[in-house]
Length: 127
Image (cartoon, rainbow, N blue to C red; front, top):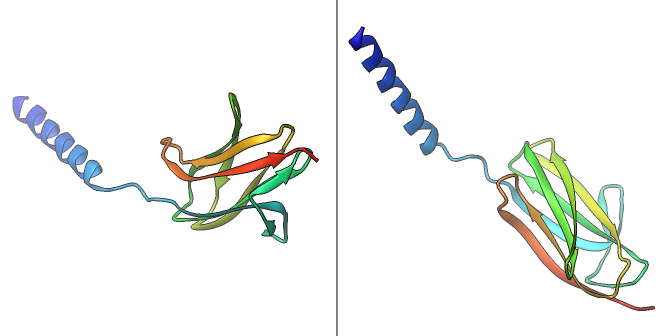
């Protein structure tokens, strides 16, 4: 009985070491901010918008499929999270936000572990 337990324990330790040595796939991202998306491509890349505009963050993710990514739009203390799935090894997707307030905004993309994959700042002015 003691031999069986010892062998089982050894197999568990080997499995744990193997899992730690195998890194999870890393997502690579290309992202751009603009005024629209047509036919899965960004329209009018920009980092300056006017109150009432809609900003689009277009992304190409490579290295998936994986857990969803989270896009966080923020201005001051206000943050808005959007979760987007990654469905293939090469995946295009986008998130949009109606810009209701003038000021310095930011948008950030994080993986499921919370690691920042992309971040950019942009400005919104009054009309």
